[in-house]
Image (cartoon, rainbow, N blue to C red):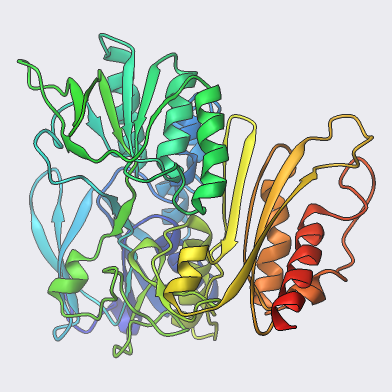
Length: 466
């Protein structure tokens, strides 16, 4: 094999990771440059490409009928577009000086080197497994890939009992708890924090707590797991904390993910405080002209705090891939950063947040005012109007919007997009009060709940300035 990269004078792009960022980058590069100009080789250690990890809880819970519904583009479709996609092949080493990667066939163990002219690292994230006895026992599941989802479904189908324990109460933990309730399991959630959803302030997380208990989920807050005891057959049988033991026929880990950057670390590439790769605005790995990175293995700039942050979301991964593919393909694109928008649900309770929480604002030294308002999703007299709580943070001196959290029924989650745009535009809460938002009684009150919060925040900022 030529160590200068592609065949016949073509450059070779090597992509490590076959999900959102990696295959978006490969596809976009292919749109801009044909096979005669750019050879593309993509390595994926799993069985699937371009799938929605965010959809796995809804597949497990039965809302999405089957695994294939979560696949945006199959390996065959990628290959038909001129991408040499190698499944069940894990890259084990990046040789930056030699401009090559070593890959191992997962099934046969055979290894080989592949040269590159340009490299994309899109290795994603891995579920956090606590360093505790029993954490790797059969019956303990992380949920990150379609293989993980299938393994969990297989365990649920074989489970002797109907007791499930979810460790952690972030997005995945909360969504998996609901999925398991839908599957007919008794569900206990063991959570280290004061309230579920630590991406919210605790006063807003309390509403999620109540909704989960309303579903029949047993919430155990302020409890750190100390071990996962196993039975005589080696399978997990419980989740233990300092104070109690919760019997379990299946355990799902929902304590978050970490960037999968072992390869990058070993290759000496720059990592941030959270262990994610650091890139410039073009998604180039800092200090490396021909190496790009995107998706859950990278850190991103938070436009509100001005600091690097780890935000593993499919929305960013797909955008990163588009930016990388455009740049690799000879065009020009940048990714400016994020404001930290995320939405979720528990049953019919919608949960949304963007920008900074109170503790984020404190940590970066911002002085702020926080207001909370109760409003309704529609005009109060229109059938189906339901309560909605909006919390808003504004900078004390300038009135700049810093963050919004919304918890409510129908129409709550996507309202956060108003705030996400306002944050991106660096609007003040006073400027927000004049936004020309759509109104009709079936959709909102005359004053939208977000604008009610903006009015209250404006008044609070003015009084603080007086």
